[in-house]
Image (cartoon, rainbow, N blue to C red; front, side, top):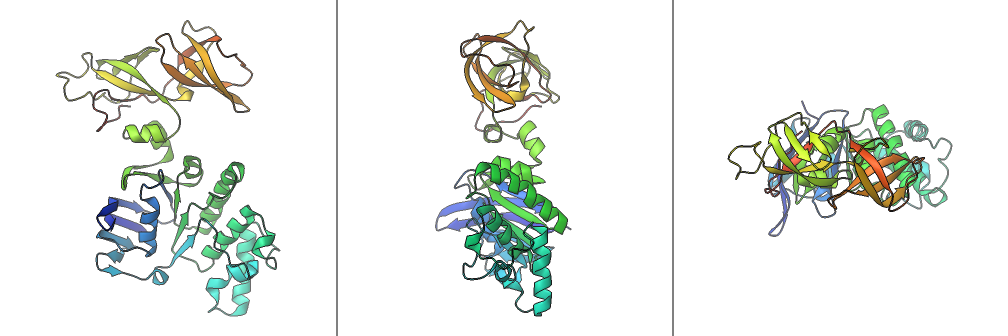
Length: 363
């Protein structure tokens, strides 16, 4: 049985539909993520799960028991759900121990103290129980907020943009730390974020949202290498599209060479016979383009971004089209220089060239 199940959830503000028919399941101990741009409905959906918002259609079930449906909603305090907010929401007048133990006040003092010490050790803040929130850094405050949410042993943990107030380096480090803590606790969790790096670092599975709908629910690997539509391909990672001509159901020509997808290509409905000259758009990621001094294919460096171990080069092809390439940083090429390149693609992703409103992947 799934730990959490959403069945065709719809939520509206007046006549405006914010969540539009969302369904998914999360198994016990899994960390999921609702990822998407601002305004896509992900935070509203999280609030529906927590019980802060009613739903207009569908049903939400926790361990098989309905907790939300039209006209009925189990109160948030009875759902055994913990929540970590974007602004931490720590009580400034309470010590760290007081914050973490706030939801345990019905327990004996000794048991509260034991649980607080246990969680402080888990989140790497042992010995800090007597301090106040303002005496801690932003990353430490976020760990306190996490410990407070975990203290009552919730059945599900919800994290709403928990790292957005932190700098990039700290966000990436905390994402990995929080994942480790949740796995150690055996916690089922849902993260909401607009940052795909956070999503990839923390989540076992990700639901990418747009316009109130799940565009693809999948593993981080599949979202990157097997996007279900053009929106997913554009949102996840970096990449460009090159026009391609289909030669057969598993062959397509692009400017840089001939590719052989693992799955049959799908052409637009106007094609009488797919594979006979249909036009498609082929997705090329920066790691699909390899710098090779011996290659006869040349491309001009038009921009470069230094990333320490590597450069991200923007390269102009003979046709004028531009592609991206990740190149080890000891290959330091100047703007305007022409370098040799070749394709090295494991997953070919192509979309119908004249049907972008309803694209289909070919891999």
